[in-house]
Image (tube, rainbow, N blue to C red; front, side):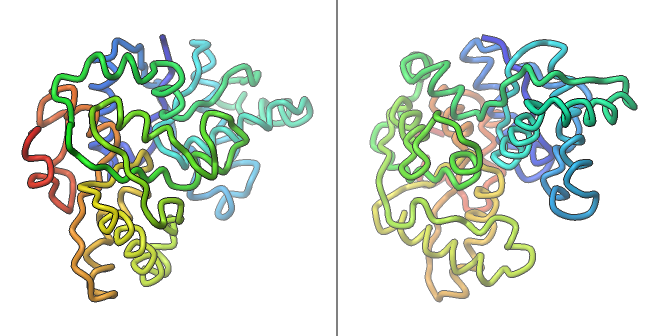
Length: 289
């Protein structure tokens, strides 16, 4: 299996742990995961604002044009990137749009025919690689660990994809099970973390985060795992503020699924990147660290 990997801007910031863990996990699984050379921001933060819809879509499409040279599916590990790249990709089914966009891409000596498929990382892990192959490389089964899976909104609700159920997603649960841990149901599992609203109205984000963390904690979860950089940041970084605002005292670690996979596969501390977590997972994961 060979894929063109689009890491996105978060991989160089708040999702750096996910980036390094995911590359290590894919190597362990024997999957060809080649980062798109000279990739640029997908434009997630400007699609509805500064530069306008069409320029933002062409900005995203530039990455697809670069990847098309290899003729490999594009895999995004950031749910925002997945949504933006996927929506841009859909536009190229329209011949008139395709011609207009390629005129813009020509300025960078690029063109895109729309031949690729944009995939989300959970789709690839569950439907291409599969739980059986993941389980086969586990060296430290996470037996006894209770995990609250939090998939977020964008990866299952923005694009009409059939890789998971948008109302009751199970892809994360399948991976967690393959690692030997126990995925648990909990209240507010599908509640939006409020995404970038954290920047403009952090009080709303804090209140929402508290409900999600409360649900996971009361259900007996040891940790929360997600695949979305923005969800991970909100649940982890805003947990202290949420506690202060709601006068609660929750301290539940929030990991990327790639980090949990790296841990179960017996990879190094540098590759698991647990030190990046704000709420320390050291106590909850003491049996496997």
